[in-house]
Each structure stands twice: as structure tokens, then as C-alpha cells.
Length: 141
Length: 382
View 1: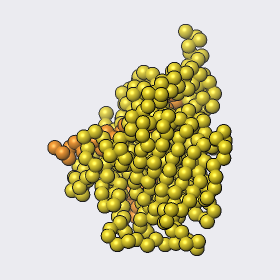
View 2: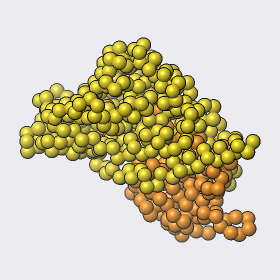
View 3: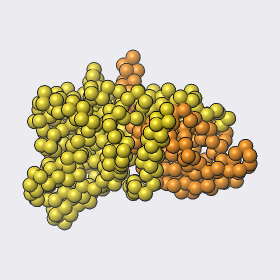
């Protein structure tokens, strides 16, 4: 019982304390949910947020490039993620909400996964380097 | 609905870190007197990179005892490890877009959710000081809580709210109601503008942010001590044996002068920048002294904010080859009825600080301001 209370306390503390660099609600429109499936064309490993650019195929066959907002890259890099961990051409699936200015093809990366649903960068191998995404041929259709 | 709410994401991030990182082993705090490595000038060498991330909050949660046993901490870690595994599990690759109108998540990101927990590094262990596993950074008052605000401070903070100096969240999370809050970049919070690390990461006092990017680096010379903060690349320059400038000269993170008391570096900081003071709002209990964003419900219940007479004394002591003890006292008779003191261990890390370089790709600022213009157009069309 005591353990439960302690755990709850710790979790509440963490959640109450957490905040993003800025108010996501001011940036993204809750009435514009998006699901994006596409291949990586560029990754900006920058602060205050990393941005993943993906080419999304439209029903008419054309492609649109969307920018997806992630977190700060700093701690990822310390987990062994490198600029090669998400190679150009990697297929990913993103769900999130579009920017409030709808002329912008930008969204928050609420969930970023591979097509099979695995979270990016998780499932590291014993080397500490992420195995997910390390092999581009694995991701290409 | 798993993993679709920001709160859950935060939680998973914490849990992930809990399982992934070993507790720092701090040596040299036992009975034997510790003799630190010294600089050529004879003073202890405080240099290194330190990871301030910890689960120990600034203020002790009500009902929690001051010190945990190792068994109690181990139980917590085991309990959360199971949730870490859960949080790392795949979700459907064939999932649909999130619900229109928002995903219902609470917390800082509002109902559009945040981002996956793999971005986060919120701390994995409680801080250990003198062999004690502490449940609060604050050690004085003994209840581990900040002292009460003075009546004058309550009035001042209320006036700031009324004047719109501090943005107040409304029911549309992330959209503050302060007049002109989105009129130009200079009305945006300091963290959003890449001017200072949000929360109290810059300080002083330097505090964990329970989220990510908690590294600090110390570079030491006989005349100057530099403290680099990973978040937003804040750099404090401590002039050894210097004098504070006249009161009207105000600086980001204040004016810091240092001196040695035995083997302890004492840093005295005053002359805080008015904007840093103006935005000094504590958004959540147990958080920092400086708060450059204002998020969360009932902000009037949570406000802290020092006056321009804020005075911070910090004490840096090397207690082991791999750790510093950081102790600080905050004094501002215009704000709190008594001074208060905190301490926590800064474990050294071999990790490097990736330069923050915040401005170059701060698309978020553009998106936020453009979003506000869009809302103005929509409102005019109605």
C-alpha cells in the first residue's frame, strides 16, 4: 500500500511538472487531426524541437511534404541516436494535429512509429545504438 | 487510447528513464574526510559536466517522509518498470488520426497531445545527500516546503495577473487570455523566445526541470567560474571576488560574484533582470522559482514570483570524484516570510552537451504567431 502511494506520488509529481517548450495548444489545431504516412526526406536535429520532414502521397498520386514536430534532440543523442538513425527514405506513420495556420503542412508528432507500429528509436540493440531504422533496406517498400 | 495523452507520455518517459538509468553511485560521503583534486591555485577542482535530473521534487509532497529507505526506492523502481515495458510497446501501424476536437489529454501540451516519451529524460533516481535518499530539495523550512508568501507578495502577484503581465490559460489549453499575448514575439514567454531555459533550469538557483536537458557544465579559472546550462545554452559568468554593480544594472540570471569559503565555492547573486522577475511565476507546486511560461489550471493558486530584491546564495562543494553537493539559500523579504534553503547532489556525467542552438529552427514561434493571425481572420469573418 505504501509502495502504491509512493509510486503514485512520484508519477503525479512528474506529470504535474512536465511541460513543453511552448504551448502546443497555441500552435496546433485540435479540430485538424491528421494521420500521415510517408517517407523521411529530411530530419532537422535542432532545438527547441526536432523536425522530421516526410513526403506523404496524396490520393491523386502527388506528394506533399509535411513537417512533424518532435521533442528536443539532446537526450535522444545521449541514448545513442545519431543523425544516421532515421535515414532518408524510412517509412513512418505519424498521428497528430495540424498547425492552426492551415496553409502550413506542419503537425505535432503525437505518435511517431514505423509502419508496423513500433515506436521510433526504441528496441535498442546491445550496443546502445538503436536498431530501429538502422537498416534502410528494412524500411523501404 | 494508450499513449495518446500527454500526461501518459510524460509518465512513460519518466518510467523509461527509471528503468534505463542506473542510480548514480556517489562515493566519498562516508566517514572518511574527502580530499578533492585541486586546481593549480590550490582550490578544489569543481569542473565537469553534471546531470541535475532527479525524481526529488523541489518541495516535499504532503504526507511524504523526508528520507526514503533503499528498499522503498527499489519497490518504486520495480513497480514502474512494468509500466515502462508497457509504454515502449508498439501501437497499431494502421491506426486512425486522433479525434477531432482534441484527444482529451491534459497537461502542458493541452488536448492536442505532446510527443512520444522517447524524447524525454526526466530523471531516474531520488537525490542522495549524506547517504540519505531525500524526498525534497528544500531542507529548510524542515517541512521541505517553501515558506508562505508575504501579504505584499500576494497583492503584487495578483496585480501582475490583472495587468496581463502574466498570461493566464483559459479553457482552450495553450491559448492564454492576456491581452495581446500573441501580438508579437516579445509578448511570448522567455523560454519560447529562446532567451532563458524554462522553469528554473537557468536560475539561480539551478533546479531540475523533471523533463529533459538537465546537464550543467562548470569551467573554472582563478578569476572566473562559468556555469553552462544545457537548456537554451544559458551561460552564467561568476566573477571571483568581484563587486555587484549598482542596483539599476540588471542582468539575465542576475549578477553573480564568487568567493571561496574553505573548499566551498560561494556564489552570491543579485540584480536580476526585470523581465526574468516579471515572468517569475511558478506554474506547478514543487517546481522552480522562475517560471517563464504559465500553464495549467488555477494559476492563481500556484504563483510564486520574487521581487527585484531577490538574493540567492549558492554553495558548490566537491563531495566525491563524481559528484558535487549543491546547496542554495533564497532570500527575498518582499516575497517570502523567511529565507529558504535547498540542496541536492549533482552527479557527474561523461555525456557531452549538444549545443542547444535554439533560434535557428524555432518554427514553433512562427507557428504560434501565425496561428493567432489565423484566429483573428476567422473571428473577423464571423
